[in-house]
Image (tube, rainbow, N blue to C red):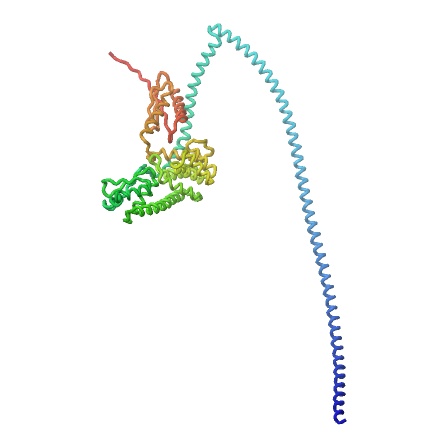
Length: 520
């Protein structure tokens, strides 16, 4: 019992403590529940208040937007009304204008009808008068036939002959007057344009040649150039296609060939070999290859320099390189690249004075002879080859027509083509620009004299001043002073139709009457 009593007391204490704790926890839980319920009620009340505020704000925003849309609609409607009123007014004005025009047309129609009636009456009167005049002329002709003793046909033939002679004399006088007036007005301006262009754009010329000279430090190198049993010189000629002439000329070797690019390549290669000192077949092939690459660069640089000098900067690289090849092409002793640059400057200057685009004119002038860089390797004229080459590189039609028409292969379609043709003639015909072979020169003069000799009444003709003037001596008994002007014009026209020549040819007709008497 002593042991159980403390245990029972402890158990009772534990039970009492647990009951007390449960009572305290239950009361605390109820208190927290009440606080949570109060907070929940507050949150709900606040949410309801905020929701009401949001609804009110949305309602107000909707009302404002409605009011704004209504105002916009009213403004747009008002604007449309104004536009409709303006359109109605314009339509009314147009109707009034059309009505006025219709009234005017009706009035003109009445005038035309009245004029037609008047014209018909006048035509009838005119026919009557013509019939009366015909009868009168017939009676007069019969009287004239009786008085003159010749038929109407004979009189008509005589009259026609007199009229023809009179017409020829009057035509010669009119041609002379027109020519003098045209020369007075146009020759001064044309001379100014041409001379000014030549003075600004004259370029140096290069005499055509088929040989190049290479200087040697000493004559000892000639043997090394020839090589053992001539193997070096044969290898060089095979690699370059150029003949090497080693003669007794001191310290000099001559390169001969008709292709100037190959000849220049051979010259560069030989100079490299001389500078290096090692001359043998393998080294020759290597030097020729390097010279060919260097020559390509020189050609490209020449084309780029030409474009820069003229002011054309958008050419295709292949066309630039082809322009550079013209540096080694000559025509009658004139360097073709320098000629092309000169023609470009002349064309640009003439175009500026005529107030058209000078850059387009320069482009036509620069490219007009580009076919000469191709005509040694391909069949066809240089104008056809240049046209095809430029067309492949998308040149515009103005340039293509200028290339193809500057030698009159086709008709010039634009003023730029005419300018290019004129500039080409100026560049080729100016003093010192070209040299011509004696045979072609003599043939050209003979053809010129033959054309003049073919006219009736011409006694003799003489081509002078290198074919730039022809003097025609006529029979004074057959050709009158007035007819001299007419025959000069006819000879000039025939020369233009049948001959090709640079620049212009002056035709001078000389009629000289000599009276001779003898004293015995």
